Image (cartoon, rainbow, N blue to C red):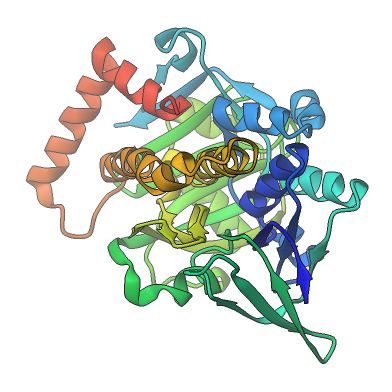
Length: 391
């Protein structure tokens, strides 16, 4: 039977980042992924990184391209009642910013670093199962190329997402908290310059929410709120661009550069947390333990903070023979998770039109937006959460 120190389930950003940090610390690890590497790289996901995440990429030794190609955002802009209002996050937070860098690119950097270091990643690992994680020597089993494989390890890190085997294995042991929102986001990726190179634009209109963000100076990601039962086929590129313009202020609507979509999808929105995040020698991280609506750009960054806590705990265990970090991992991670869940829920509630909100709730929403953009205290609270709370 093969052996390693940490078996990592999932080769998305959280699994790859954890593997790279452990490798830097001299801790042996193997990553198992049920999909192909090309499939993992093809997933279009978030692209706004908190400073915590940027720092972790540097710590892992893979931040060079991020710093060269990532675009720093100094502000966000809120559009409501046909007018645009800037929130200068750097000024309000003592110089803190976020960086636009696509998750696909971050994943590519981590994949290439892992391959260059000769570290083992098993792609297309079918029927992965986790065993004996309540003992001193957990075992991971999977099937590949018609053969059964086993890996003995000290610990298992479940970084395999909401639909992965890690949380499913302990489903009867977790308490799940969930809120499902009554709408989705229709997202379009296009090779067009962003409407604003240094700000992310959030729109609240009578037609629903909109979001203008960027992946680079030549690639943009745009979203509009849509009913859950809409189909991608219902939305031609022309219809999408027309709807987006209608949800922005007139000046910004005229600046939008349109082009053919290179990816188009509809994503439902949910808030989800599974507690606890540790089960013996099995630890959950990232989307395996929590989901946030994308409104606050917290999903990837929460996964990164989980990885920071977990990698530090493993280093402490192997270098200092201390279990303190492992014992406190779940509580520490969940403390930050719930704050991010609150912020993401609040921003989602503030910027979207709900089917049952009615005239009174709509007036309250508008009043809160007015207060937010004209109160430095309220703007500061938004900015502090947006750039990321301290670890």
